[in-house]
Length: 438
Image 1 (cartoon, one colour):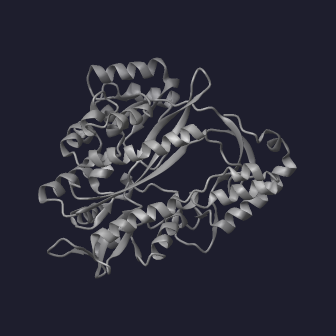
Image 2: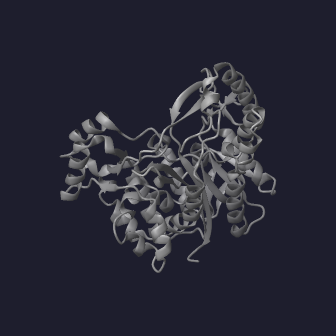
């Protein structure tokens, strides 16, 4: 996947001028983050890091990723409805991973009481890299699927204009015309709007569960603004706010500050440090309600690494998607090698493989939010410590995807424009809405 930016990346003076123009356009378009110094204030903001030039994606792989996204929507929804599959799959993980165990406890409590919600909403993002093969042709391989707080739909909606501007400045109008339109924030908002409509109360609101210190607020505001344009009002609250001001009536309708809530959209709640005891109680209150949760607790569990690994086992896709062999084939074609580390011979063999060839594998815990995976010597040391411990069941092993690196120029606040070797990751957003058992 060679790029055509080579000569441009060698001209330092031209790069500096292009970088200045690109940053100005990014600020004008709203490709923004709050600063790390003031994460609760929008008084001072900066641009989100981005590449000066667009990354190239083979059209066949983009079309493949689009085509399989509906299959992933159906698969995640099927997993979320299969309580027996979730319990069996996560049985070893919840013994060793307290965070997953807490989520699963809420799942069990809601099942025992009876699920009140009748509208189910999924906003997910499936992430891929392009695995290079021996013949030089890239293959689409899934890294993970994010089923809670799948972010950057808002900022991604604004970056095409920045890259078109850069190419237009260079008089590369043909290349600028090849940059596809990209507006995931609208699609995500349409999913929320449909769930709100199906809830059936025009006076009800959308509740966005936010972090108190949220640098990525403009990404979220893009979706809020799309909803407001459709006369659907959004309120932002933290888990602490819900604990203090949230309540259920006798029909388990959710109220916050006296206002009925139709949809709960989580942009918090995907990492252990985001939960105090008070926050866990607030999460349970939300799950018990009849509001449409995005995601509900079962769908969050469906996005765990352990579920991802278990789905790669022979026969699992066929069991969850019966009578859909074409969908099964499309899904399976995107899977990289995934291995259980549960106690026993299978897990022992997986550890032996990784220790024998550490450059070929990555160790993944049951965590979202990035920066949690272990590679190389760090992975080797972790596996040596874990190999005789049941704690290893809280991890999975994945074959490392090896994409073809390419040169681009990275733009970061506070740093000069820097030409570096990059690798691409492609994220495809998926939206689905389901009425109960339909």
